[in-house]
Image (cartoon, rainbow, N blue to C red; front, side, top):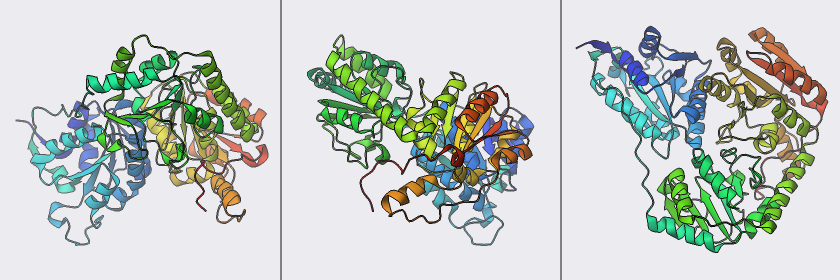
Length: 545
C-alpha cells in the first residue's frame, strides 16, 4: 500500500469532503499539514495574519458551504483563536479547527517545550462544540472524520482537533475511504404534532411567525405561509429568508414599538429555528401571544428562554413542508390585518430613518450602488447594528452576515471568508474604526487575495456605541471611548489597494459608485465627525444600570 504522512492524510480527507479553502497561520507545529496542502495543490490556502482571523474566515465560509476549515499553531496560537471559536459556536457554524501540539513524549508534562501551554484541550473544549486529541497516527482518519460529523450535526458548531507534530509527520498506510463523514439526521415530527400545529393556526385569526437562522434553507416554505396571510418577523440572522420586498415581511424590526404591539396582539405565534436572543427580545421581556409554538432542530432549545405551549423537535424545512400540506387551502388573508402589518412596518422604518438622520441616505446609496447578488458583511458597530442590520434591504438569505456573539472586530475576516466562498460576488464589509483595529492585519490578507471587498470604515474616532450607553445610562460620563485612529484611506494605499475618503453624503455616493466598478479591494473611510452624529445607544433591553 502507498505510505503517506498523517499531514498528507489530513489534506486528502479535506479534499474528500470537498473543502476548497483552508484559512491559517503556519507554524513549526503545523507545518507537516501545511506542507501537504501546498504539495498537493488541490486546496487553496489563505494566509491569515492571525489565528482569530483564520477561524473567523472559516466560520464565514461555513455559513455558505457547510464546512469551514482553519489551521492554527499551538499554545498561544490556539489561544488566539478562542474568541473566533466562541463566535462560530454562537453562530452554529460547522468549523473544523485543526491545531498542532508539542511532541507526544512531552504532552502534559510542563516541560517548557516551545509553544507548550497548560491544558490546551481544555480551553478548546470550553470554546467549541467539541474538541479531540489525536494520540496515534492510525487513529487520525477516524478522529478527523468524527470531528467533521460532529461539526455538521445539529446543533452545528466548531470542533477543534489537536495533533502533536510528531504524529503529523508520522507515516502510515493510506486508507481506502477518506470521505463519508455525514451529519446525524434530525428526527422527523409525528403527523399528530403536525396536525396539532395546523389546527392551532387554523383557529387563529391573526397568527404571527418568528423565524431564525434555522430557516435559512426554507425560503420557499416561509414565503408560502406569508402568501397565506401570516406576517413574518425575522431574527437578524434570518433576514432575507422572506424578502424585505414581501408585503408581509416585518424584517428584523422586532425592537420597534409598532412591531412589538403587533406581536403582542396576535392570537397565536409560531417560532421556528430561532434562539430568541436577548438583544432581539428586550432581554426576554418581549411579549409573545398564547398559544406560543416553538419548532427547533435540537431538543435543548425547548423553553430555553420562553415558556411555550407546544415544542416540536424537527428540521425547519421538513416541518414547514408538512405543515403546509396539513393547512391545505386555509388562508388568513385579511384587509384589516394586512393594513395593520403595513402600518407597523412603515412606522418602524420611519422611526429608524428619523433616528439615523444622514446615515439613512448612506444606507440607501450603498444598496443602490451594490449589485443585486452582493453581500453585506457587518461588524458590531453603530452603523452595522442600526441601518446595516435592519434598514439595508435584503432579498435573499445569507446576504447580511454578522457576528452572532456580538463581538467586535470580526467584520473584515468574515468578509474575506464570504468572498472566498462566493467567487464573483461583490462584498461590502461595514466596520467601525474601533473594531477594525482588532484584526487590522487582515487588510493585508484581503489585498494578497485580491478579493472584491469594499471595506467601509465608519470612523468616529472611538467606541460610538459605548458613548451612547454612557450618555443614556451613566449620566453622560464619558470614559475610555476615545481612540487614536490612523488615516485608513492612506493605510489602504500603503497596503497596496485603493483608498477613498468621504466627508459628506454626496461624497460617499460618488465614491461608492467608483468603488463598485473596481475589481479588487477598496477601502472607503467615512468621516462620521464631518457627516454628523449617529444616534445609537445599544440594543433595546431591560434597564440594567
